[in-house]
Every structure is written in C-alpha cells, then in structure tokens.
Image 1: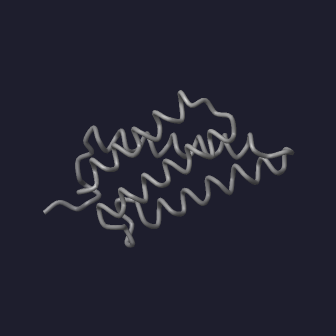
Image 2: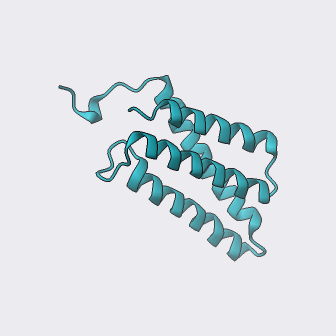
Image 3: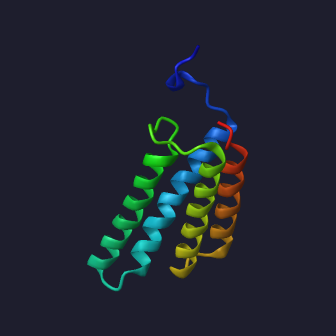
Length: 115
C-alpha cells in the first residue's frame, strides 16, 4: 500500500494544480484592481487570497484531514471557480481569460472528483 504522499501525479493533477494557482493569481489581481486606494487594494488582494487558500487547504487539499467527499468537493470547487470568475470580471479582467479559467477549473475538478 502506498502512502498518499508517495502517489503518482497524473496530467489531471497537474492541470488541477495550475488552475488552483491561476485562481489565486486572479483573486490577487482582482482584489488589487477593486481597491480605491493602494492600501485598500493591498488589503483586498490579501483577503481574497487568504480566504481562498483557507477554504482550499481546509476542505479541498488532498492531504487535508477535513477533505470533502468527491462530489461535494467538485461542487465547492466549481463554486469557487465561478465566484473567482465573477470577481475577476467585476474587476475588469478579460472574459477571454476568466471564462476559460472557470470552465477548465470546473471540468477538471468534476473529472477528478473520485480521487
């Protein structure tokens, strides 16, 4: 029996990780753009990223002790991607970036829900 930390990471796992990184980047940029001052921009960027990372590490991460079951995890992940997309669109980030991000993110985590 293999330890979870020793498992092989497939293409789906790599794409999932990349989508997670893009989510964090989009939230940081969106937070920065939505602020009306440098201080507020910084606070929003940090808060958006901190909330997303906290949710992800608590309920979504492969080694989390509170990891949600597969289908519920896929629904929550899709919700996070859609929410990130909405915030990014409100911040003026191009739909050509945001829509593919949300679609790919939802598809990857729906496909990976069994793992």
